[in-house]
Length: 337
View 1 (cartoon, one colour):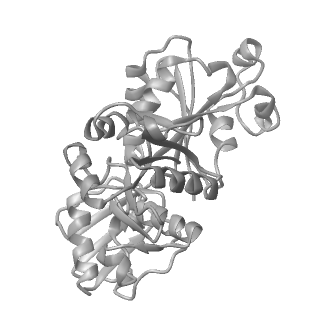
View 2: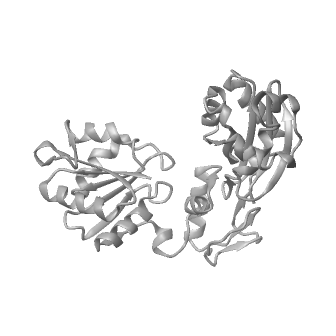
């Protein structure tokens, strides 16, 4: 996670440096006016509202050390959605109050404000109803369980039920290790439902929402120069055959020989997933557990790619699909549990 701190005053700049020192495990850039700038800071060289636009999507968290009114006017035209906006925090120059202003849940502003307040000895100001009352919003639940939200409008409606003390049922294919509020009851049918599964579901009511665990790993090998379109199509076909939602893809896994294979990386970006690289030396330690192609072994030094790469980059689980070929592409599908 990376932060930006934006301030316009001498006192604010001093406080920004204290914050950076107190959060030494986080990458932080400090922006201030030229007259307060030094080797520890970067310079704001344009009007504040224009400057904010230039960095708005470059950081996970933006902390403004200034009046909240100035911040609201500066960020207003850049706000798009709670699923994409960065977390916005506002703090006074003395560090007395740390306000979570925008994207408290998905953007992480609530957690960041609490962390910062603890480090500087201030008071975190959290105004989201679910947090104030010790409940949990659907998007917060999704974040804590590393899930994607199927529909943010439905999530909003189900969260409204939760904060209004209505009974909401939950059915999950994954283990839930966090404490749920009393009105979210496992396997119970309530006025709303939360389904946690990587399966493709048909959600018909606005009072139902699916949280999609990011627990699918795509092991992949391919011929040199395979275009992204072919890989995207192959992955979609494989997951469709398993009734798995493509939004559950956590990462692609491939051999070090493919670390510059553009098609793999472009396809992973299409699915909003990262690519993990596995060395051939690592594969050799487990390849006896998988079917081995003598041709592949002679060509690259190991007899298999997609299966061992998927397994080696996983945190437990099992194969949903072992090696399958798709016109120059081999895929395996692993589910973490």
